Length: 90
Image (cartoon, rainbow, N blue to C red; front, side, top):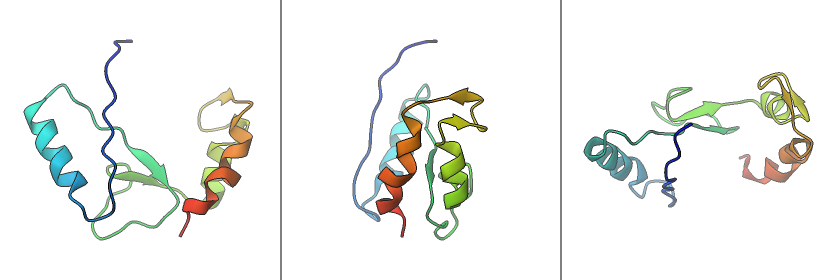
């Protein structure tokens, strides 16, 4: 796998992250977008799999279980993720 650099855009909602990211990606064609997962509902015209993967809490719990059926692998530290991240759920 080719190694690259990770660039993180982090700012409050409505601050222009998507606008900035779209511009940067138009200028650097080899840049790729990583789609994150969230348990919040889609906003406006957001599309599942494009801006985020929109998951139910049950989906999140299954995806982060020690032996996730989504990844076909076992992760001994993943079992703590659902409780760690529930504060981010609206």
